[in-house]
Amino acid sequence: MTTASVDPQEIAKFSAMADAWWDPHGKFAALHKFNPVRLSFIRDMAAAHFGRDAKSLKPFSGLKLLDIGCGGGLLSEPMARLGFSVTGVDAAEKNVKTAEAHAMGQKLDLAYRCATAESLAAEPARFDVILNMEVVEHVADLSEFLAACAALLAPGGLMFVATINKTLKSLALAKIGAEYVLGWLPRGTHDWNRFVAPALLRAMLEDKGLEILKLQGVSFDPLAWDWRLSGDIDVNYMVVAEK
View 1 (cartoon, rainbow, N blue to C red):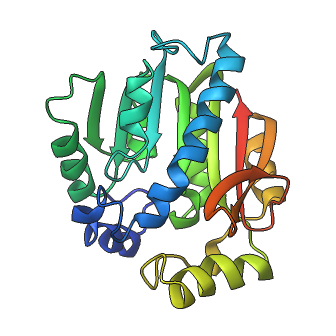
View 2 (view 1 turned 180 degrees about the vertical axis):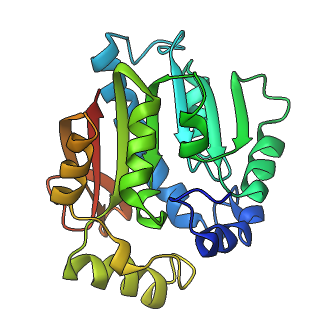
């Protein structure tokens, strides 16, 4: 994978951890803990946008979803269970093989590909929902990457972007605290220089023809030892944009 957005060092880093994706106590334990709050946020926002009943068995039947940087499939599988026709893509072949192996036999409308946003944008398929969850802080050329993602989104579709703000607070908590103090993430998982301020992300998405619908903070509650939606965007946040 040699497109502008792909950083070979990032691909190598996550390829080396590919076998650990589905271990809730392993290297991706923090992501497993984070998963429920982002899943419910995506479900509720998409249901409201497309006029679907979030409480029904498969509320999103008939809609196509693209999970970019899908890793081992932690989001792709539950999205398929909600009725989406899911395509999960990752630039790391080892991640794709892990995701395929875990999904095998589950009879989900789910397909995985080793690909990039740029390579997919050259194809005719377009998607009702695109997920860019914890991805943009790892790409080499953010503008090129978002341009390709915007091209892949169908008119009226939703793009979800989850990332980390570039603040001193995020340096202390998401980088130093998470990697070096608490050990929630392997050291070197993130580069603070690649964290993205909401204003920059908003400007880039709007430049690609998208309208920002929601900016949502996500915070860790140490008392409940769990993640929750909040008004604090100083560290983790999610953006929802419409084409």
